[in-house]
Amino acid sequence: TKINSLDRVESVTINPTDADQMYVTTEADGLWITNNLSSVSPSFSQITTYPFQHPVRVFFNPFNTNEIWITSFGNGMRMGLDNNCSVPDNLIASGITSTAATVTWDAVPGATSYKVTKKVVGGGSFNYSVLTNSISLTGLTPGSTNKVTVKAKCGALISEKSERVTIHTPLRTGITNDEITLYPNPAGDIVYILIPEGQEIQYVEIFSVNGVKMKIDQIQNGRILQVDTSQLPDGFYIINVFTDKMINLQLVIRH
Image (cartoon, rainbow, N blue to C red; front, side, top):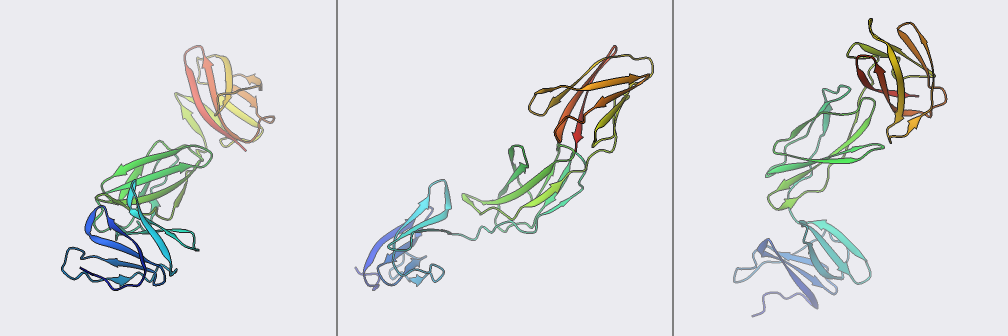
């Protein structure tokens, strides 16, 4: 039984998640589709968003069945989306502190969950899964730049990633921890460490974020320790302060 009158049909591909949907490639009439394959007389329509007249094969990405890959004779390979699982839009970052932020976006109709990716500039990437159109990010590094994108998941289908929103976490102007104060932060050529009364400094260590111990000069004047950071490259450093009563770890930014 002939169900279609297109000339020079080269291949057909049935959607692995929808048996009623079939793609048809032709030698001169472009790419066609039917969404009622099980009917007695399926109706076919040309996919005008595919711009080339000679597609050859249609493949579904087995790792993301929302993606369709189309090979052609003379126009390379193209990728398109098969469904209406929309890309999350209107990402907004709010409530930004030195260590936390909230990101919201417009809800996607039919979405069952969202995949959130946070990329730390100069650092790693982190993925999160949430059920609603917002996420609270905690544990951010003061003075860091974080780029966030979102994908919607609609059942077995996954959207393309959203436009990114960039979060710049502010630096702490002064860090006080267990009564030990480090200032200024961010630092220039000198960092001052104020020790609480009744304690004595044993020694101070500075490490890069990669764990490399840095050489420094220091001068103590009473409760204030002056640390020379002028020879350090700009960047993030961890300062360990050892007193006779505690060990104190703090982050300092040299610029």
